[in-house]
Length: 173
Image (cartoon, rainbow, N blue to C red; front, side, top):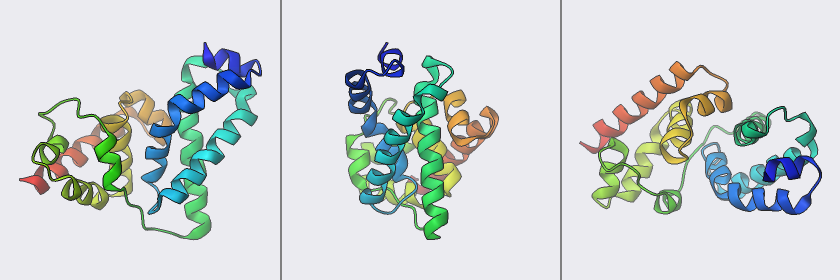
């Protein structure tokens, strides 16, 4: 409903979308950068581009995936421009993220109260594994949505998530 109203030019509806989706989008952008400032800038650029490009959105139901993919492209463009290969995530993100399943390996460290260690492990993952992990395990996206955002197949997302979880499990053991 908000997407449809936004597509019709309703700035209040778009503002509600921004309010609802910005925290998760910022967290995803942070997986590309070492600073929250860079993640925030990329998030804002994604929202600006989204507002300007709403007419190109084909399916209202695909808005979130469309937005995340746009943000991903913005982040990758910024990385290429800066030739910056340092990509980390802060402890603060994990503290704000609910733990949906206590049995998942990524939650073992959280249960033990080792938040800083957990983020060191997550930061140590290769970028592709870290992105799959953040999108599916932390943001709650489906494999299909994560595949659309990262421009890979669902099976690739599943494999990356499995490898990320294995690496996390090995590191916390």
